[in-house]
Structure formats: structure tokens, C-alpha cells
Image 1: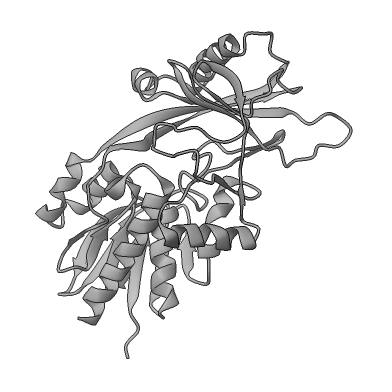
Image 2 (image 1 turned 90 degrees about the vertical axis):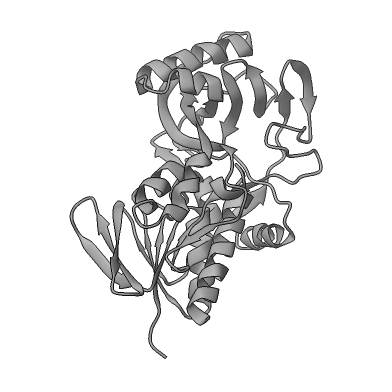
Amino acid sequence: MATINIAVIGAGMAGLKAASTLHGIGINVAVFEKSRGTGGRLATRRTEFGNFNHGAQYVTARDPAFRAFLRHAASQNSARDWRPNLYHGQQAQRQQTPRPIADGNTAADIWYQGAPQMNKLVTPLLTSFEIRTRHHINRIEPHGPREFVLHNNLGQEFGPFDGVIATAPAPQAAELLQPLSPRFDVINNVKIAPCWSAMIAFANSLPTVFDAMVHPDPAISWAARSDNNNNLPHRPSPDLWVLHATTEWSRDNLEDDNERVASRLLEKFRDICGSRLPEIISIDAHRWRYARTETPLGQSHLTGMKGRIIAAGDWCLGARVEAAWRSGKCAAHAMIETLTS
């Protein structure tokens, strides 16, 4: 049997789940990722003061198969359950278990984090398939009746491939795939909101019993302490916090610069804490232009070019990491069905 070669664009949860599923049945897979690491919005910023989980802060599971994946990740020490003391809105009592929040989680959900950082959550999906980081694929070109060649922004060419699974954010997926087929025009119906994230290192611990705050301010949707795994010698460990701005605030300030955004969110956080904050030893911000799906596609994936080009991602089903995992899995099975029919 001839070797089957599939390209996967994106090394977030959806892309890596698709790649590992295909690789698991003997298909040759090459993953192309425009950034320098894997995990997508399961992101960690490493600094001299410690590590900031500045993207997704935790995941939950409703699907039994994804729940099993998280348990497997925990058994490999790449995930752990997280039970923060939670402050919800203006309710000033300490919560030992999570309360309902905007994405539909309930108090019965178990919250998981990657271990020791959020980007490690994808570790069980990383097997021996090829991952090419810092490769920004900006064009897919048909090559003969059933093959495709990829082009990156540096003019390099890769392939040919028997099929392609694209897991970029919806606006980027539309730009990449619409030239191939009008079947991908419906991606334009997907709406994704931005999110500004601020990362602040305090010299000493904040005077609060809370580890995380949900909607504590009209400008801030989430504030949480990031675990410090740096164990700096000869001095107290900094207290690291990540702030996520609300959708509305992020849209209103989308094109502002990092320094100004970080400063403004810090002032909001200072008002929330209601007391003098410890010395700040580091502060930065990161803009997630495509952070949270507001209007999903409504199906697990989208196919075109006789099933050999597939779009997938959390934007297909919703805003949760589980949605990305499910979409990647379904996209891989759809590709397998195309290749074996």
C-alpha cells in the first residue's frame, strides 16, 4: 500500500488531536505551526520571574472520551485537577469549588490545568509525527487530481499531500480555504471575540484569600494566580497573576499598545483588590485577536475538495478546549473515511 501523506495546519489541541489520530493508524502526518511552540491558546509565557499561563487557564470535560483523555494526561503528569478558592462577581465569600461561569461550566465540573504549565496538556498527543514550528502556511495549491502543495510566507513549498486539515482560527481558515472552494464560505458566519491578557509579577503575595476571580470588574472577566514553578533561590517567590479583559473592553482597546493595556488593566485590578498592591517587578500584555467563539459553525468540521480539505477547530463547536479536541478527532475520522472510500 502506498504511503498516505496528510498535512495538518496548526499545532493547537484540534490540530494535534487530528494528527495523533491519523498517525495512530499508520498515516504519515506533517504538522505546520506558525508560532514557535505547540498548544495554541493553551499557552505559557516563560519569564525570569516564573511562568504565566496567559491563554486558557483551565479545561473541563463533558464528553466521556475527552474526560478519559484528561485522566490519561493526569496519569502522565501532564495534567492535574485545579480547585481554586474562587471569587465570583461581587460575592465576597470564599468558594472552595467552582461556581457557574460564562462558558457553561458547573460546580460539578472538575477543572484541569496542564502540568506543570498549560501548554503541557497536549503532551499525550505528541508522538513521532513531524511538527514544523515557525511555518506560516498562507496558500494551499491543488497538485494534480488528488494532491495538494502548501506554501508558506517565505516562499517555501511543501508536499505534495493527499489531504489537508486546517485548524487555524476561523478568519484565517476562511482566507486560506475560500480560494479552493465556495463550500468554505460559511466560515464567514463564525464570530470570534478578542481578548487582552495582562501578566503581572508582584514581589510578594497579594493580600487576598482568592486564587481566581470571575467577572470582578466590567473591564476584567477573569483574574487568577499563575503557579510559579521557577523556585527562585535566596529570595521570596514572586506572586504571578494573569488578567483577562472582557470581550467588550478588548474590542474597544484592540489596537492599543501592550504597555498601555497592561497599565490600564493593572489599575482596574488595583480597584478590585481594594488595598495597596505589592511592588510590581514585571508587567506585560498579550493580545489574543481570536480568543473566544461567540457564534460557532454548528458542526464538528467542514469538508471540501472531495473531502480532502477539512477545516476544524474549537470555532466549529464552541469556545471550550474540549470543542477543539472533538473537532480534531472528527476531522481525522472524516479524512480517514475519504481516503478509504
